[in-house]
Length: 277
Image (cartoon, rainbow, N blue to C red; front, side, top):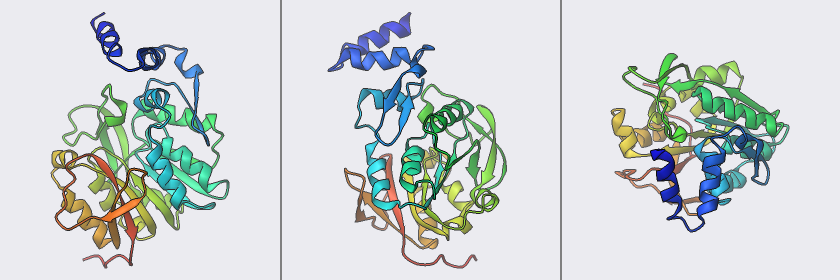
């Protein structure tokens, strides 16, 4: 009762209380997933997931990623989506690369992965390969948190809690799927980004663009910094840029820059990767 009361109280502070409250209540019932949300090139269902509720709340939510992908992708391209969540980037990319392209959608959390699979099926996205796994520097097993905020679940480095999931190196997965070149590699793994990059150095050498989330606070939990991520990308031959409000490449990221806010940046290939030491 207390949770319901707090939800009603917060709804009262919203400009459109009913619009805010409706998806949050409906997504908790068996009827929520019967409702679909038209996103233009694809649709999703009103599952109990933050991205689903957010898309119902405001049709403009999560559109910056779509703007970026439209500016970069072409029919026939290959996209790898590490941390696919419920599939917003995956489904946008699937529509843009068309039947001749490929999208690899990787999501470790079992509940979120089931929603991702449902959305792939809903959109008949036959050019998508869905993989339930974490991605890291080494293969084996990992543990992912199981919090209420499904888009913020993260790999537990101390392996003392969460849900056990398989963990793959990006290079091993790319090899098993015979990915020759990658147009866009998107990485959003709540602080595990550096380990994805380190386990994917051969794949990075065949990648044109890396669309990656950066956040110093998330990185610090895992014992590294923004500088480590930028250095890994520089060694791989990329130049990093910020993104403007529309989601398009903007200013060159300067030396010493720190990602004090959680944001996405774009790494653009400039040259071949440096030889491994």
